[in-house]
Length: 125
Image (cartoon, helix red, strand yellow):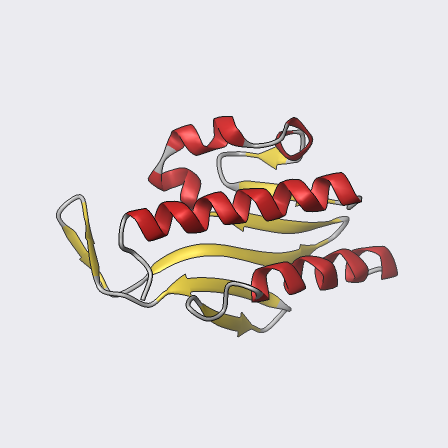
């Protein structure tokens, strides 16, 4: 990972860590970082012991920012800042190769909205 991507990862890591606790912070080999809600819930009739919230993964040329609340409420993506939407690849993965204050603020805002959505659904421990 080059120095720019390391700095982006470090900044985003700091933002995600603000949510732990109540979310559980997990790390995996390869600098993967994930936030999980470790609460037993039922989603569409299926029992789950936990639910994924967000994560980071370094890739060649970008940092992957994964944001699962879009699967909970598709309308949440309409609330995203256009600058954040420009980095969206697929439904829940954002490719962050440059990070300025505006984009960082948009990511922080998305995380807060997703966190509130999980809170409203009583998915937080």
